[in-house]
Length: 376
Ligand SMILES: [Zn+2]
Image 1 (cartoon, rainbow, N blue to C red):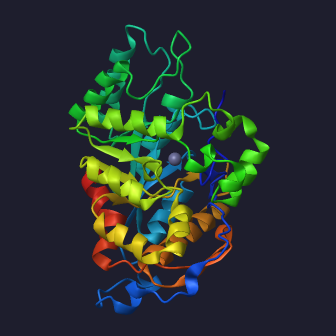
Image 2 (image 1 turned 60 degrees about the vertical axis):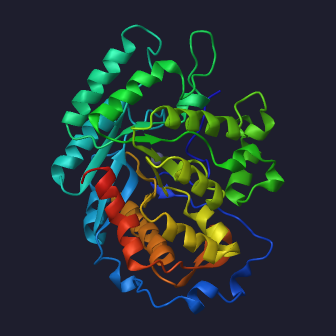
Image 3 (image 1 turned 180 degrees about the vertical axis):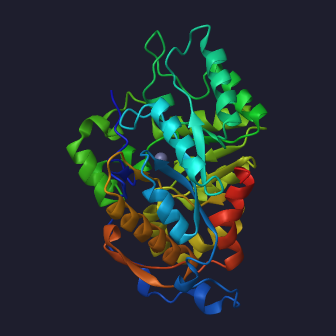
């Protein structure tokens, strides 16, 4: 079975972030908000502060030599972490590597990148040595992290045809090598939870539409495949087995559906942080129901959250259009996280109030935590 990242909830498609759609039966936005009403005046930012505040997008994919993404980052005061991924619809790993080096050379104080490795040859005697040698070279060349993708657990098979899971003993040496190199491992280990639900139970319209059209990827229909809970359990065993390894859970550690569950993950694993890439609409879905709870989550875990989008500049994308889309995504997220302004979130078919997070929290989520994790 081949897996298609592109159309899956909130993944980047053709240089755009497709925000997750949903239609809550009732949107309780009219309720008075105790957080706003009663909170002592902790200063928050305004839209006018957007370009003034130093920010970092910890999850992008610059897959073209064109520098549109970098130019927009400069204009909007963002740094970037571009993550290389062993994903068949992306340029080859070799090309991604060359693009990352070229972009970093353009603006080394703004453009950072994460490397990855191929599972080709896994299980052979030479594989671990090849991978660790390549990681050594990449980190020497400036890579700030190593990415493992959901192909481990959902696609890759061993010689006996069994799925290779992240806690496979053969991956342990690589994990320990990443730890020794002093860089974090960015781990993406599952699909949005909706993938395992029947269509009528999914929270978002774009997931519903996608899985209706692509039943082969709809895990609810494939109980023989690992469940969401199994994938999470494997990931947790892996993280527990490498307590010194810093782990960045991509896409809210695949626990985007419930900030309480994500909080439990962060409590259990002090070495873990998570990025918010391509899951903001899931956060907005939850804050539409209970703004105070979601706001409190951000404040409580202000040292553990990394702003990220999954913006992907595909080869040949129109630079002007891509810059406009990038600016719009970054502004929308700022409006939501940093200010108290409401905005229409089309994919939710709802007006969503901003969280108006305190400035100190925004400074960490948007920059400080990334600077610490990736040694900017
Ligand atoms: Zn991504």
